[in-house]
Length: 127
Image (cartoon, rainbow, N blue to C red):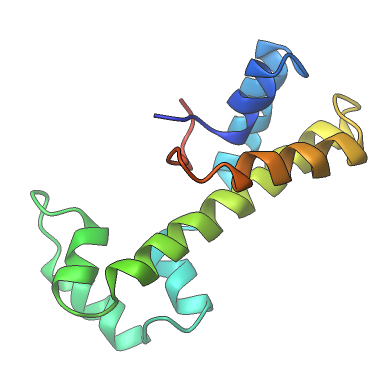
């Protein structure tokens, strides 16, 4: 599986391992949960997430529960996961730009490249 945007930049030889880890950690601290993102974007209503949280089972991941209960379609979940990954990549890029590890132009180019390669899945978590 394809890793995070920071791992992509590392694989491209644009940043070192310490910078990749620091950027991923910084982004992870502010990563918005899928349920919160779905609420913010109007995909689900507060009562739906409250219901899902009451029903949550350690055997069924939250994302699967939301789709399984009909609170959202699989395509909506897929879109949310992409938005979440993009927001994390922006946070990683912001961290790296602030610390002088990558230029704004390079960030924009690599951000586009990373998300335009749709044949590989994107991971929002570190790894």
